[in-house]
Image (cartoon, rainbow, N blue to C red; front, side):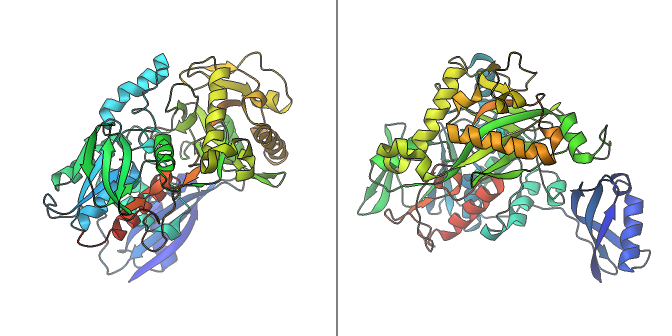
Length: 515
């Protein structure tokens, strides 16, 4: 018999496997010889005593699974029909894995470099303020997630099988803990090895992965995709194309629009990265002076309404670092990441304001790319205020709210450096006002959050794509181009590693059989 029970234990108790087993067996009414498996773990910090909520499966006279997720034994697809996949992020990689399972040959075309080679270009951004437009935090093997955290939490359960994605990741080397934690996380230090293992699996089974292949044109014939142009010179015949280029591949949006392939405005959000000392967030969330050794660095999630507009935290990184995520030289873009141990002294989060189509009307002459133009203009403004380098404009939180200049900035994890600026001059007025209103509202119920020890670093502008590439809800193909499958964050159908991976699976499953 298999029974599932819920336990509520202190962090110290939950770390004792014998006590956990005893409590689970007792609650299940099982015999002393029963075996237990921890299925789910989450933190409840609503009261002064922080508790862990556990879901435990109790096996009595039943075999327990060994939780060894072996990679499937698949046949080679070397001579199978080809599916070309533009982009090697989570959407593209999981689309490729699904093609292998279906007996199709994935051919991945990635504009950037492999994970190991990308590191040199990331160092150039941090140390010398040099942005390679094809190899940076957003472009390259694994996509933006590879070097920007690896958070796996998603609310997109209706879009696909979250468990399937996580099990694949475990099979490729991620910790089994990602199947247990309510907010799973891999860590930037561990993701490159997992991404490399996925690539090798694709190659071992007859797929192809090509780096340095920037798609510069998608050509059609009789309403069907027919050829891809790479790097402005190489032409590749194609029959089925999965477009999984991510939310920052702006040249793809411009290329589609100029080619007469319809795209649409999509609402997005924009704001700042806000960074606190991690100890302040621990104290605020765990109601303590010193965080227990049995608890992880604390995180938070905040949502406010200001002038009927959503203002919220996004991509929270406990024990993390603010990263420079520009994809061109004359822009400043911030994001955040954490290593697997989340042991850096700062906590950062995006804090953003929703942007609707009406907000971008000053850029109406860009048509459906008006949101993209709005986004680009704000990033350019940040670059100017940052001193025409990858240094980022920054301001202390209370100074920002009270409209005071910050004369001395606190220590900050952003490696290219920060420059004191009035963030209200960097950001559009409605975004600055939305943030001010949200911080004042938060100060009433989370007073410890509202402090001049916190620093606002700008801008956080790539929360999601400002463009949607339409697709037929039944075939998942672009309604105007047969054989073209918009996918993932760049298509406007995902927002994060897991949701992008699920969309990659979904789109690959929609490829007609026998292509």
